[in-house]
Length: 386
Length: 104
Image 1 (tube, rainbow over the protein chains, first blue to last red):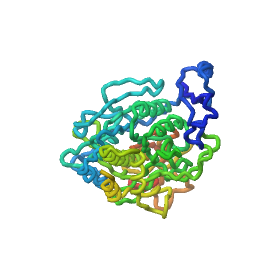
Image 2: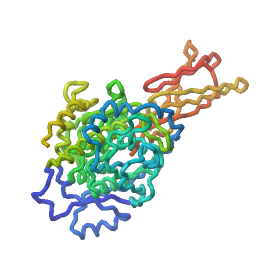
Image 3: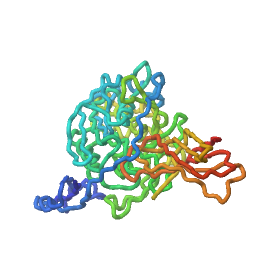
Image 4: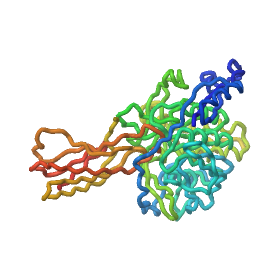
């Protein structure tokens, strides 16, 4: 399979370009073809070929053992408590009527934390062909179940689990076990756009600078979605890859997330860097991009395992990402219930205005802009017009 | 080949067969994401065993150069050593964040 980015010729000099710094993304369309002979067919439809990339399937030779689920059912998710989710819920800000997309390994729907989950759709994207099927929800590993638990798991045994339990969830299974591909992630981003997801949570990534999903991500964000993506766990890597794509894409509507621990110290491995996108990339000219944008709870996070009554204790920017996505969903649900205009921009503004600087003064490659202040978020919500 | 030390060593088992002088080391630890390949123990080079009799190894693996999931994952490897220095007293395994020490 090949992923073809093509530009509609008639738009080449259009004044309707919505992001003048990224014109080739503004007017592009993605095609998936199984043979390069089909490029002529795309050209004949009035498109100019911008780039052609072969799908890559990434296999994991070392299949991590699922291992025993931790005996941590009597422990709370400190991340949800750190973000004081109960105070959002008292305001009836629980993510209701907000569409949230996740791309991950799948979800174990039968877990008690998902008993009242509003799972609107679950799709399985073939990592070789990009074909979409709609089986009953399942998790081919455990990662997706854990992340979904952080995002929207309900309380169990009186313990806090997730952040935003009333969201409408759109789940794209984009991994086959632990193996992923370019095409499966690209198709997921397109699907989230088609479903008009308000927020998308991506606890995944490709270490380094890879613009393969630039077009699909651009469309998703232009369509109004707020994308929350992991910054990666490569800060101390010996390679140059200290951040991950797509978390390191330079879009205003994309929030990359680093991870802090229970003491609110940045996790040693939490990805970050100051990025200059190369001139050969689709982000040519985008320099000094600071990753992460902000940080969230991501170390020793207790959440659901793919077995009834079981939980796992896991660490990574994978875990920080759904915490922030859940807070964004809570904010948006509150604004939406008030019937205010420009609700997603307002959500982003409230998030932005609520970040408290940590680490070096100003934005830096460890904490980004800093940590979310729940007090500041709640004060802004309560100050909104009725 | 781009190798890096793993994040942390968590467990270590050492079995010494005195009849054959074969030493088997099994090390378990964590890496920072899914997708790490070819875990192995790399012995520190030395002309003679250090005076303390401790043999040092780095626990290394190849990090992913592709799409993977940024969550801490388990990893393990086993090494069979067929020539053991006479005065060997112990094994030390180095990772990014820790080193583990065990007497055989």
